[in-house]
Length: 256
Image 1 (cartoon, rainbow, N blue to C red):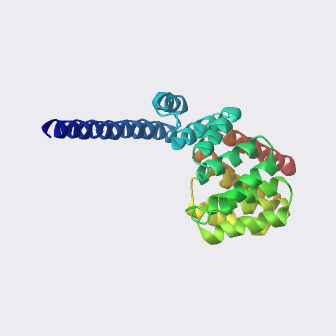
Image 2 (cartoon, rainbow, N blue to C red; image 1 turned 60 degrees about the vertical axis):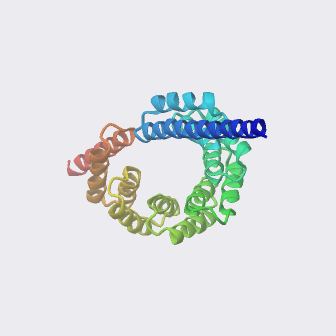
């Protein structure tokens, strides 16, 4: 009987040790993933990728890790690698809406718009997804690219209805209005967006463009200059400077 109890005790100690080891492994995995995500948020993509790769050596079956790696590759425009990791995340966790949404963004970048739409619609059909405004906004963008403007507007409006201050959807809707020649509606919406998100450089540039199209050059210049203040070294700031030069040169020609 004593021998029997010793065996039971040894088995219990073995499982306790395994449980402790698993907890330590999970903590280490989460720590590496958190570090990588913090670096990614700072735009340090190579450093983030290094930490994620370290984690992947031990935790290759973590769908969240594959999604994070996919996001780094997406930011670095390594679209084939991004697609590979988002797909791997979905293989490991088929009901992973963030990975499906991100895969759709890859397809947008690859100009495979119909595949992107399928991904975004799968996410919108997930009734427990906490951020449905994101795939709805992406559907608005996809249909905008396909020049189906009325459908695009419908999806953008649905996204804004769910999250009224979602500046990305507001900007997307304003771009549709500009393309359709509804400049005043675009200006009103973009001014609202800039109040909510004053450092949203892309929306500010679109606002400047809308004013330029309306021949309101004073407000156009104000917003081009604002773009430069927000993001002085970016390609967008370079475009803003070019537009400022064009407006100023045209003004000189008119005065002469």
